[in-house]
Figure 1 (cartoon, rainbow, N blue to C red):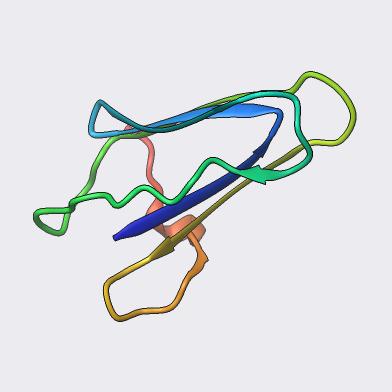
Figure 2: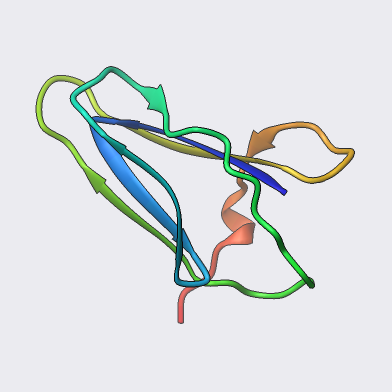
Length: 82
């Protein structure tokens, strides 16, 4: 699975306790990169995003792309709360 996250001004993303991406600079809405994330089996994984805003506008978006699929916003139904 490929993940893409956009933020303004910074964010750090962890999946399963492992840091997979970080953006730490004052910028308009920008990609933190497209890390490839290994998902060994279907199920629930801890997904944590720390987001900070310094000045001006704000954004935080996450997209994913499964192998052979197309890139799309991660739907609300993919998230849960424990």
